[in-house]
Image 1: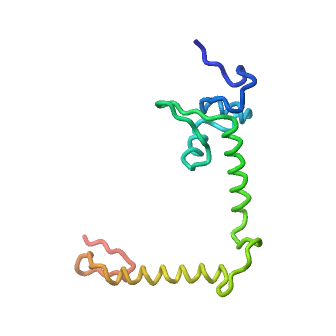
Image 2: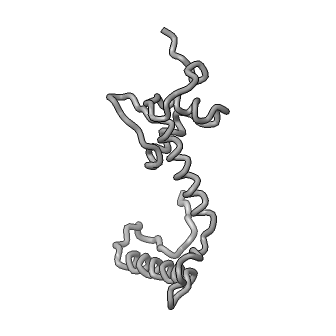
Image 3: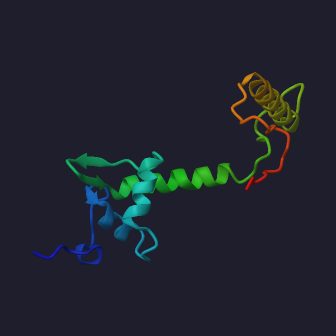
Length: 135
């Protein structure tokens, strides 16, 4: 028995369970979306699915919701500046806050390095910066 392609299926109810391959063919008829890409979206929590044994199904409505999430996520991450909708915090700017966090991380790293036991062989130092090969 030959499995029908998405083009052969024609009209499908938006809530009908479809294999990921068929759902990708129907929702993206240009072939740009594959089963593998949909699986990646599942791992990222953007595509709702139904799993029966080892078979994974989704619906066209689920793909529509995934597209909305991806579109909203894309629009939301277009700028790294603070949102204009939120009142600016009093005190440090977002750049200053980032700088402060980086400084704190560097201080913690230095403290951990200073406290760690020396695991280098004798005759080497942490600050030498050059590796030497002995014949």
